[in-house]
Length: 396
Image (cartoon, rainbow, N blue to C red; front, side, top):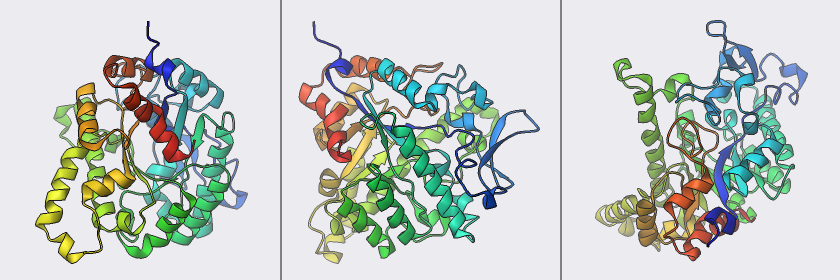
């Protein structure tokens, strides 16, 4: 009898999150910033825990910690005490990974990822904003030290300062971080847009370090909170239906990111730099690339930029990766047929509301999902998608 897929391949889950503990910033940032440091307070209206920065409320910690909770989103654990400890305790996380059939996880933040707008409100005191980001990166480095071969950090940067972002990327790379997070559209925060040559020194530094630039969904949206998670549909639709609306809107934002990386000449100018479209799926990519190849020719891009040597689909196959977590065998097989199997990665998004994890919804463990959907894939494709591509990309 053939062993289960999760027992034959060391699955690398390329999109997971660490739920930040209440004292992450209060224990690490200077006392002079005590009145502004992110901390948890009790919402006087509901009794729920909520993150506060200065006097401005952020998200409730349970918003990002759906795994282990028994209600459908946007309902979530109301207090820190209600959150599954495996979302923030490294040793318990490793046990959960073993249970779910996952060998290693690439780890993303929550507050540092989804709240650049709030931090930029404080940008008059740049040193405070730098300390905020450094504190998270140091925490993540220490958290991953529980199992450096299995818990893999990627770097948050203070993108409101390009040179400081490069310095932080270099500092964290020297501490073992394996990638860097960047906004899908920094122009949303009043910064130079993604395609502005202003960012070329940043791309160049990442290329020289050999680390991928990761574009996680939601990194160009308004600050994420309970309201935004419930969508913008009419209240009569119901909070659960309105929550479902949010996800495809976020997923397809990475189609625009992909187009900008290619049409903006970033892939051309930095041919050894890899990019990852995180949490947005893969089966839309063949359609988007076919459309982009068409628009490329129909819009006269080649005449305008004779230096661009490749078609958009060829730039993608050289440098860009997509990640999936729920798509069926048929969808992934189609993507393999059109893209090949070397630009596709597997993720679960643990422990977020849309994660592929057991709960009250349709999610299951990674072990059960790959066994249910991918027994028909060749061992070569399984090895690449579940392990080898991520190991090559992140230098594992």
